[in-house]
Image 1: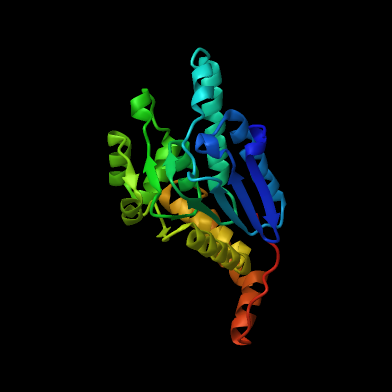
Image 2 (image 1 turned 90 degrees about the vertical axis):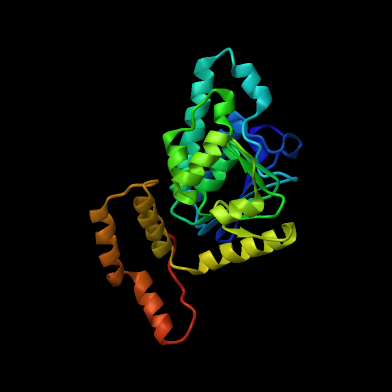
Length: 263
């Protein structure tokens, strides 16, 4: 399997499923894998998918950077910077997706793995999940965008603790902090509940979900849009097809059938 093919995309009906498939390296991400992930996100945007699930094969979610590749890039600062810019761009694209996203986390979730997880809207995990951010041990800084997304999820105080101590955070603590949205007993329950949540999203108003994501991004500073634009979108929804369908379904005591997703 090539590095690019180590990130796969399957769109099953209205659910897009991204999978990191490099278990022998604990799903560490190479430059080619980040490129592939970015291309898959573009494909999802063009599709009719209404929910996104991000998972991995093997025992670990993502151990961060590909160490072998990092070793080869040490003598080439331009390559290192280019890779860092690519990682930033792909994580920003994931965070900005108009459809809701969910990360399924088992085992190690370190470095870029944490970046991917917090770029998703929700994070479901098993008890063996563990999280760490260690840029200070490498003589690096954590980017402003990454830090903003992390703080939006767990607060500035917890982000400070993770980044300044570089300590490993286990699943129960991560759940208490909000880094894990929901904790499940095992992988079977994790998969079942994640699929149930994704399926529920496909039945909701895509316009309402997209606008809710934009409002939350404006509120926490991770995806600023502008208050005037969001206020206009709020008022316009009362004359939109999704509200007409949702209100009619409520009055008629039936399940709503919303039109296609919106960007």
